[in-house]
Length: 130
Image (cartoon, rainbow, N blue to C red):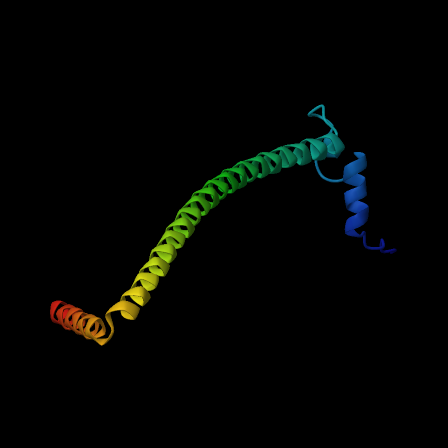
């Protein structure tokens, strides 16, 4: 008795792909070879994957549009804040210049009033917060 050498999976796959051998009579009886059946299965899998990829691309496109809109809004907000801080800086510069002029003209009397006013404001704010 001779034993047949074991068949590898590659041989069985090649036989199925070429329409020879395998179970089911090689595709006879249903009018379609196993090669055509494999091609149809792979075609449907490819179509499913293509539709999944197109859905993912559509989601990514929506996300990028939303991110772009958010970035534009944030840039507008930052531009407005920059302008506001510039105006506040100008106002502080003007106030400090006027205080310097006041101190030069009035001497120590105005400085005492200014220190007393600042202390009063700090005590008042402490009282409000507590």
